[in-house]
Picture 1 (spheres, rainbow, N blue to C red):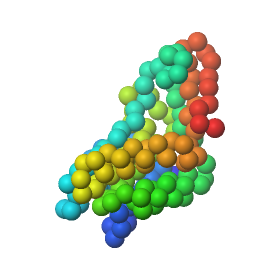
Picture 2 (tube, helix red, strand yellow):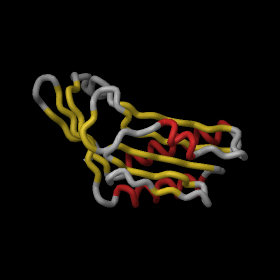
Picture 3 (cartoon, rainbow, N blue to C red):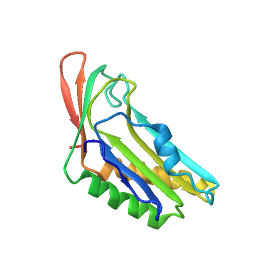
Length: 150
């Protein structure tokens, strides 16, 4: 997880990575470029300054990943590529300590049409969040902390 990316220009899955270095929108967008795609949907998840459930002020956040995370990310990506007319797909997730405003995850999908791209990218981010073993540890202003996704 030291920043290595799995790339494959021969199939629809162009970039998959779980890395401890800052994520790049340009890298992900470039990876899903395809002349046969009429629509590209890009989702960016960022670290917010409050918890989405209780609203408590977040002062620190760290992501941890199980060693199988990249393998599970590939499984999720392969399923999306099989279920939709995907021309190109990319997904990267950050691990380690992050600050408010940092990019935590980026997914992008290119398809022949925009509706397919939106649907495929939605499935990709939803399945990534629910099935890939990456956990979030939040620290709050009042000194409490919470693990999410375990």
